[in-house]
Image 1 (cartoon, helix red, strand yellow):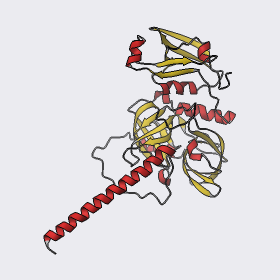
Image 2 (spheres, one colour):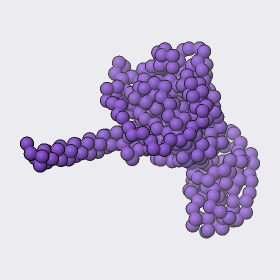
Image 3 (tube, helix red, strand yellow):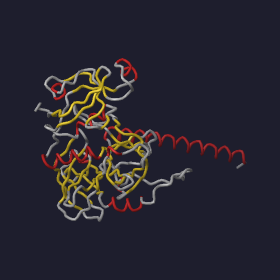
Image 4 (cartoon, one colour):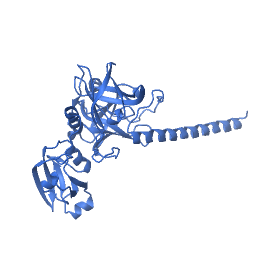
Amino acid sequence: MTMKQYGLILGFSMLFSAALSTTLTYYLFRHWWIKEVEAYTEPAESNSYRPVLTDTRSNVWAAPEDFVAISERVTSSVVNVQVFDGVSPLGGGSGVVLTSDGYIVTNYHVIEGATRIQVTLNDKRELAAKVIGSDPSTDLALLKVRSTGLRPVSFGDSDDVQIGEWALAIGNPFNLTSTVTAGIVSAKARNINILSGTYAIESFIQTDAAVNPGNSGGALVNDRGELIGINSAIMSEGGSYEGYSFAIPANLVSKVVSDLRDYGKVQRALLGVNIAEVNEFVARDLNLPNISGVLVRSVTPGSSAEEAGILPGDVILKVNGIRTNSVPELQEQVARFRPGDAITLEYVRAGKQYTKENILLKGLAGN
């Protein structure tokens, strides 16, 4: 064989390999990305994932040294959740221990459709779990296992989370137990339109921590090891599950699981307003000093908002002193309350700022 022939054969082989690689990459991207967007997170079969070598990052960030201690502490509060329909496995995800006597929070989409749920603790004990309650509108579910001496996670204040701060995602991707990844908080109050229903609440914390199938229901913690969110979804445009991930804020989680534990279902409070974002044009038309707040488009007759004197055209700035600069932020703040709770609103009307206290919130039934 001449060198010229050898070169042609080698060139053809390289071209064929590149084409095959591109085809496989395209197939895997479509298969996994579409599945993730439609189903949020659905763990891969145990034999469907093969680890691959990746290039070393050229830029290495300096992480706080206490990540080691945080990881060791929090992984003991994160469990593996496997769900079954009879004897047939449906998939699985992660969960976070809330109490020493066995209450565990996970995502609703992890346990949806299950007739049997098995939880594997960090010490490898396997326990049967029952569903105490679930809330599809926030993608949360509360489980209970019969055990004592479990290590509950410590809650942080998700309102205090700052864009740019460190965050750790802890879960069981691809059934790889106690996996820890790190990133930063990229944004807050993200709505990515993945939850259905009239009263769906999406106000996600967005991070760039690597979250994969099986991480759903796992913990997102700050650099003090405090829970700031429950990982729920990802958005990946590269097909490698290293895009952005989204977590339900811990303050909302706390309220929902408390309702599920005490009542078996969420006690949803409503303000009774149809709202929209404030943009440059709205701010100019309403003579607002800056582009902030949430615009009231209409008020539901007989609602808490109507009884409080809120009018279409008002711009709500704060709920109980917490700024609401987007629709998801206002929805999240109201969703933390139960019917009968009283709140304070700060709003702008015709260029003047007002404060209305003791607004009694109503429930879905209007009481």
